[in-house]
Image 1 (tube, rainbow, N blue to C red):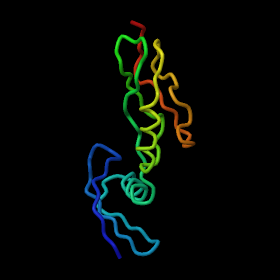
Image 2: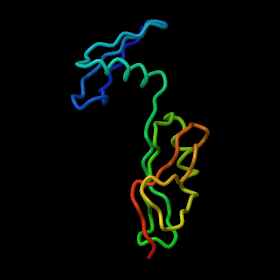
Image 3: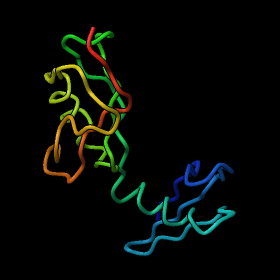
Image 4: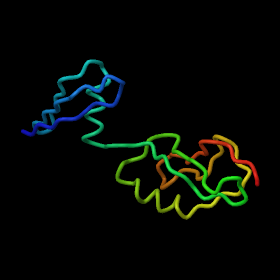
Length: 120
């Protein structure tokens, strides 16, 4: 049996969850809403994150463009995704929600522009 403590981020309350693992049985306590147990199980079995970063821009009025994935990707792939994103340069102009990288690492997640960027 193993017991882990997590701060839930599924809603603004930030409950302190206690997760008890006995073999394949997972019990979650301390949640104030129904999203807490799902968050805890996902966080312990397959943690995912939305990746937010920047890419280089050629001929833009700024030299970096904020981007994020449209869906969460496995936490274990974040650094590999960053290697791809860091090698990417986009050409201005770019509109908000333009797809910068389609289906990064085969995750089904697209890297999207978080803002528009006009030319210099």
